[in-house]
Length: 312
Image 1 (cartoon, helix red, strand yellow):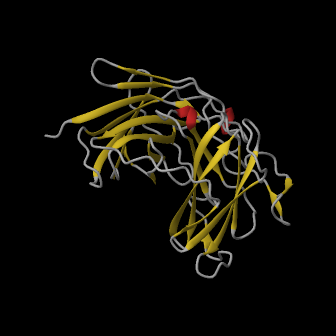
Image 2 (cartoon, one colour):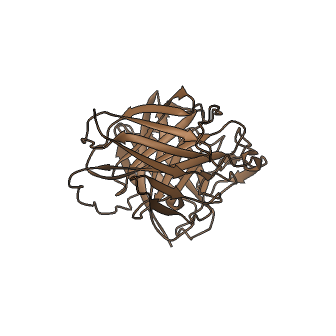
């Protein structure tokens, strides 16, 4: 029988307002039984960027008008918090690049399993797994087994510390994120140099990141615009399709050790933008280096485009 490691995290409610990433005061307290309790306040850094009243807005990098349309997330900020708790169970000794089962159990504050969840972005749970050095990124979807239990199999590409951002929505309550931790034994890879290049090639896709202003200031709203082209022809993509019901998804993490809920931003694409462009609006709560991962569906293949940005 394998040994198992269990981590516990108190979730934080996602306040779904446009370009509002509130800071979180969070502590981690190890219990005597080896569990880790993570405390986050109820105003975490999650941005719903197209949830306001429809309004035509001029994109500074295009001649097209972009409609910031109301979407299915509107009004979630009015829902009360579920105050749920998530518990992670994973093998105590994880071998890099070897599939490992993980279990996430969602409970109320009394330790009772929560049974009912609402679907959002076409799934009941989104799980973002990143190494704390931000070199590794994975976005997967655990399967609901009932009685608050989610299961999924994944692998961890290299030794080191990992943070798992579990994003879910208890039925009738506000969306929440739990931050869970896992350790992969061994020598972690050497940290790579931060590259602020704004044009990169990912497989058969060239991605160019444009910003609405040359310098990103803390707390100021900023447009992040992904211009997507075919790498071979340099022509705008014509085969971009919805991903999880939207034009694209964006995860942002501040370079920090250890990673906490305060470092996490999850933004969603604006509607009605030019065919080969995907636009996001967000703000950055603190100065520092941030890594961003934009995800897009090119003819049923998910393209993950990662860039670094510097926030003053």
